[in-house]
Amino acid sequence: MEAKRQRVADLLHAQVKVIDIMEIVKCGKTLVYDVKKKLETGKGLKRKMGSGGHNRKVDEDFLMGLMAEIEADPQVFEVSEWTIRKAVSKLGLRQLLSNSAKNSRVDRGKKLLSWLKKKPSSTKNWTVDQSRNARNDRFLAYAVEEHPASSMMLGVVASDGKRMPPFWFPQGLRVGAKEYLAVIKNVVKPWLDATYPKGNYCYQQDGAPGHKAKKPQKWCKDNLMNFWPAHFWPPSSPDVAPLDYGIWGFVESKACATPHPSVDALKASVEKEWADMSEHYVRKVCRAFRPRFEAMVSAEGSHFEN
Image (cartoon, rainbow, N blue to C red; front, side, top):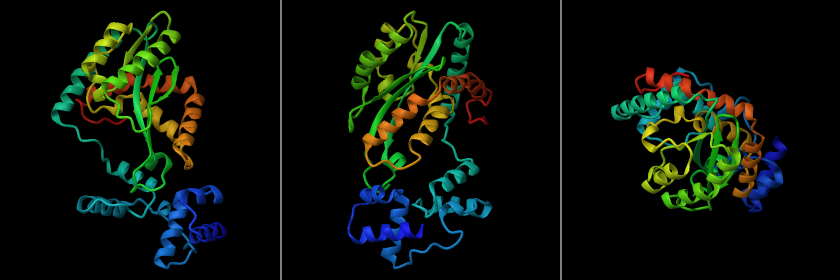
């Protein structure tokens, strides 16, 4: 490791770009920026035993200190992202839910559970779509402070384990109702027709503004065999959305285990892991959908343990 650090330092002195250093040395951006910071501050390249953000013990003192610092002045901490994720989980920090959102979650949750009782899963393959913005501060991780490269992907999975090949919106495109509807017409509908020629599916979207707009809603109602309208889906509910609670994290953990030198490389990695994801796993994730809705209703719209 010391030899690798010295190699990074030599390349930095030679004014080689960070992205090129990562490729030459076969290392992540964290090591490069750590060496760069040590050079700028005059610190030695040797690392003390037990140092590093990943070795920080997430004990009560750390958690309380973290909470106080976040409330006083949110900032970038010199610990690993994984340490912060563990701390946030232990602190129980979650999305804020207003009373209105809770009431809506209960009301719409009951509607969906009623629908599921009337439509046995053996006769309908429930499908769900969602867009994901792949950014380099999450996937590529060069420098969070700089403008991240990004690309929006539309993913569609079904309760029988099938999933549509990823669709990538053009980089930088602002996806509104018009752009989304074009993809539903030209990409999603043909896939549904080819995959379920008997029309034995029910299509559901997330609550993105472009999805809830009048034109996409009307088109889906008129042209899809079965469709859950926007007023069915509860607001602020990633905890009951399969792509949020089970699919995206699974794909990201594999596709983004190491940094990518470009958005194209990121896309290729995501597409590979999406294709390799087993139908058994997708079915397993989707089976948790109904129990999660039941838990949400039982919790009166509040967050629930799962």
